[in-house]
Length: 403
Ligand code: HEC
Ligand code: HEC
Ligand code: HEC
Image 1 (cartoon, protein in one colour):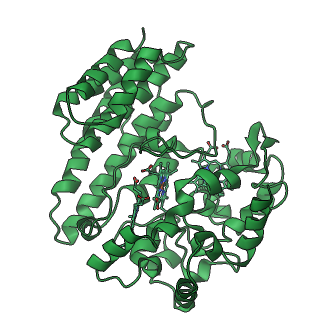
Image 2: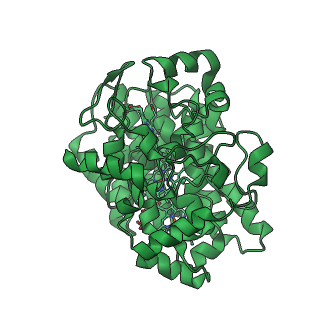
């Protein structure tokens, strides 16, 4: 499609056109880029896990490597092909197009120019959300200035390198067929990250921890100013099906054994860790923690069920734990039994998506698909609306598992 070719050209020059923003804003962005980098003392010396800002949650910017920007992942034979082709046993090649057309992360920077953002920023006495570190830190790949290559552009939003790591060192070698798998075998996820800056997204625990660094740890004053409440349930977020508008993911991990049960269990454990960190951060700032405590309690209940049935507590241990249809069914029943205690939409959705994830794992293990009655009930259940219909739908789902 010509439009994409044009975009690729545009990306090389300036990402701003993508956001469709005014010249004044472009000037503001450029001005901001000219400023000195945000204080990132931790970054220069810390371990790979070191975060840009120690005082608050911030996404996983890896120190020591340059971020090349989304345009670096494009080009013939790379990630902006019309149709994917087989590489190392996976269909690869159209990720950029899917991200551009169907991924909420592509618009994360653009969001900062809309009315809702202007209102939130106004309440926080922030002049401009689109140039404020307090917003950019999660709504872009917020690499500090010295780590930005010439082709890097904040306006690409939450781009490839947010989740896959800074491209500087792996960009070239990973284009060789089989390179990533070979290196993964040799130096593992840890080596890939420390030597090449490549984050191994097949590592489900690492993936979960990366997602929740943006999705579950926010400052309370942002919420008080009207920022949407953050919640996270890995199974539904990983499939981009949590909200009313569904995005499209550019990966296919359906071949991973017990993937949906794992996503649920690992998600509860990783979310629990993040929710606890959020409580600690709020306490440190003297904020009332009631809302954050509720999230901890919710994930604690889920993680407890996961620990009981899959025999592991941490995200990493749950990634290598043993799963079975029986355990998934029992965990789903126990989760569904929490329904009467659910008192918010977040809690109702967390329970409903958990039951769906575990049920899907069971149906798949039995060689089948969810029956129509299950799918109908799951629609009502995952909408999470208050009322008897919701509780009934959750019960129905639990009853249908394994039938
Ligand atoms: C750098 C921070 C960051 C990271 C890391 C991140 N996200 Fe996001 N995500 C966002 C932001 C910001 C939005 C909101 C985009 C918008 O609408 O402006 C978002 C939106 C989403 C949405 C849409 C939510 C809805 O209501 O429909 C899904 C789904 C999602 N992210 C899943 C994930 C998953 C899965 C991961 C990990 C693999 C992840 N995200 C990692 C920042 C991040
Ligand atoms: C800790 C990370 C984080 C920070 C900091 C942050 N956001 Fe967000 N924001 C998110 C995530 C994640 C979402 C998507 C939530 C979801 O749908 O699950 C989001 C969603 C939004 C939305 C709703 C987007 C939509 O499509 O409905 C707006 C508006 C927004 N943020 C504005 C801001 C502004 C303005 C700031 C700075 C004052 C800011 N955000 C700071 C993580 C963050
Ligand atoms: C919100 C996080 C996120 C963003 C942003 C993101 N990815 Fe991914 N990507 C993932 C996850 C998670 C996987 C699944 C890993 C796996 O199982 O192989 C993945 C998988 C892939 C794969 C392997 C395909 C497969 O079937 O597994 C490629 C190639 C890829 N991404 C390229 C890109 C490119 C190019 C971009 C930017 C245009 C991008 N990604 C943006 C999270 C992300």
